[in-house]
Length: 477
Image (tube, rainbow, N blue to C red; front, top):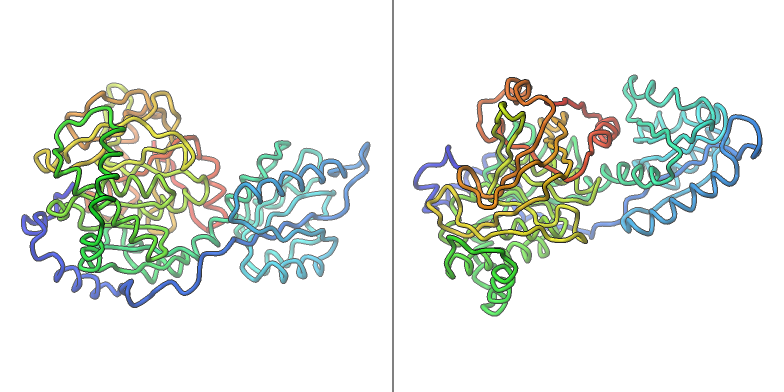
């Protein structure tokens, strides 16, 4: 979509000079001037066992067998996730809690396991005073302390609660708790201009609220990388895309060659810059060198969120959810059919591995971009009918717009709208359409329109994440 582009911008002439002025005017540091100084490390999480186990046959408390099971599940999760480091210990007093927090670090989030009646309330004060994000895991009958975490949250503390007999919830807790420290190690590349809500366009606000660094990328630097891609590498990439496609409709050999070249160059750029996210604000001006859509697909499939149209809100949403669930998102435009109670999402770039980097690829067609007369090469991905989905977007850096749905239809070949399309059943399409983006104070069509779709129902996890990061949730529809 490029309804706000001029013809000159659309054709890509004279872009580079204008971008440098725009980027400098918005205060973005250039990537070449701000290299990453150290590699990304593991996220430290402090696990506090609140007191000694209860007797196996009486009292309100978790017994030794239950605590052993919890520790074993945490050890397995630490191994499986690979990017967390657990600092674990028992606390019977505020002083012991303070010592564990000192070992874990001043900003370490906390997983507190409720063990005995009122043990948590006796040891929690240093966690609250230190403003550590905290999840409390409480087994049934492990005490009455489960009543207090959300009371603390309502008083302004970043606390959430998991009350369950399912030890797998401990891994979900670690996934949620690692998000904030991972964001503080995140480096985002932006080809200006940025778009979206005003706070999301500000590198200073993103740094202050989320901890991530945003740096601007000069197109001439990327063009040099593009020119350096070897013909053999392009051939292999193009062959892989054509071999695995169900059908090639509009793109010719040159279109596929250009898109493959950009795909490789983008992957190399992210590796060189050691970046975890990418936003390209000039997508529609890239036709002469090759659209980035295949490259965006490959990046998302490898766990690196990439957003088109410079949409920083959508990019930050994809990064947050990637850290939380290890799955890529499908950023797209919305349109409704209230007669069927459905919402369509459509875009010309989409991940193939919506189940995660180790999942299977969805089938796809190779198409021309739908808004430029069939030129270029983009994927039309055919997502899984029957899949439950979560549609969401972080806006203004502090509010999560969200709704559930289910994919009920995917076209065999798209006609109107962007290439990849899903039709999703929603709670109340008429209500949703009437209130669409009513929370946002903007008239920018892209900011109003875009949402990000993820496989699976993550409504509950979004609420937990919001509590841990000081955000609010607005359910749409």
